[in-house]
Image 1 (cartoon, rainbow, N blue to C red):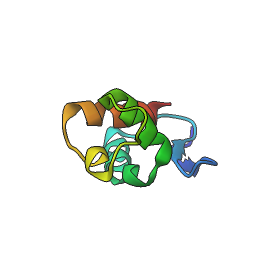
Image 2 (tube, helix red, strand yellow):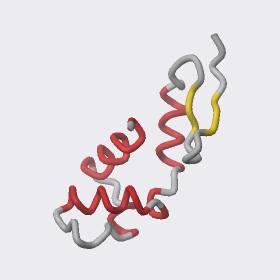
Image 3 (spheres, rainbow, N blue to C red):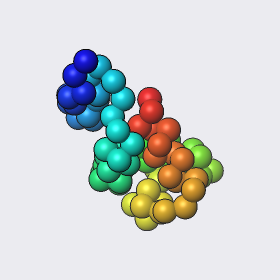
Image 4 (cartoon, rainbow, N blue to C red):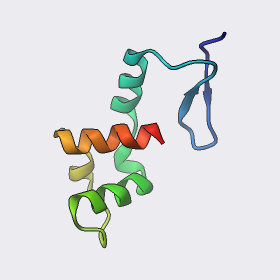
Length: 77
């Protein structure tokens, strides 16, 4: 089977045929512009306890475990 990647309609890369190597997945998460994604900001704001206001750029760029877990979950959907 082919391990090529394809762009999904939402702009995210998807593996065709099998999983991407862990390094590629890490690089995608690391380079994804989470601070420019309103859907992620809304979800993160719920996790952070202020659902009425989207997460700020400072919050989406935090490097703590909670935000990293949210980013990984967002990519897994």
